Image (cartoon, rainbow over all chains, first blue to last red; front, side, top):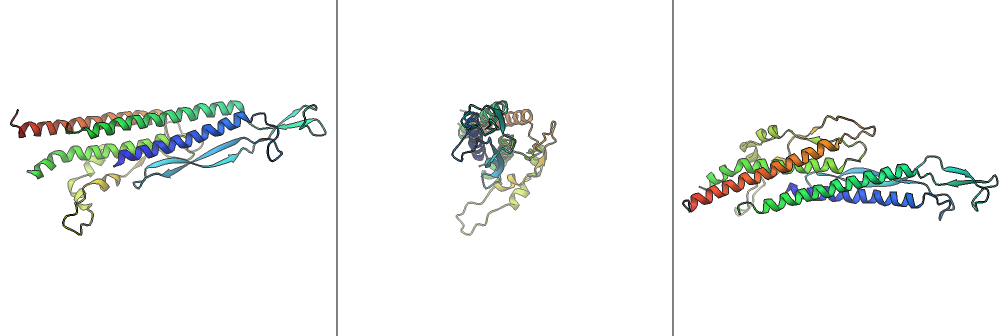
Length: 134
Length: 136
């Protein structure tokens, strides 16, 4: 029954978008973390989406293929009083672009809402299908 | 008599099957709105409806080894509809061709048409019931 795989498709999209929201939250929370468990400043993380088959009839869902570290240059600030400053007084801070992350967050939440809406429409259709002939 | 029933309902059943398949395809497009390189797909409903002829449906049958096995109907033939890539109106730089306005519009349109199909089938059932009850 094809309509049931809409739930799988929308569900996979919701899972992927919520992971993207999680990564955005982690980026925003660490926007000023000058150090981490590795001793280096936090690097911004980004999710990579990939299309997958979620049912036997090749319905196309989406999943997070991986989380990559943003390789753009780190933010370097001159602040000799900072405990992490090097001998010249420069501190390496995360390469998190707060504006980009806010845009990312809005995009993820809109996509999530789209998936919820798809589920609701499909649920209504299935309920109506169940009441055929009544 | 049962054969006549089937003939009566066959058209709408096929239409509903195709609508459901299209709903699934469009949901895949919406789900992949942010996937790099994903190409939005759709199929031509009227062509698919013409192609899903009764004889094609009969060609698709499951092997029945025991007489009591239920013979298959047109479930598989619906998913074998040829899909086409949508022509993007505003292609994005990551190769994704999902246009959310188009997809949402088609999704709602398809949902309403599916709903209409259900109404037609319910109407046919009511007609039959009315005949069975001799109009009472």
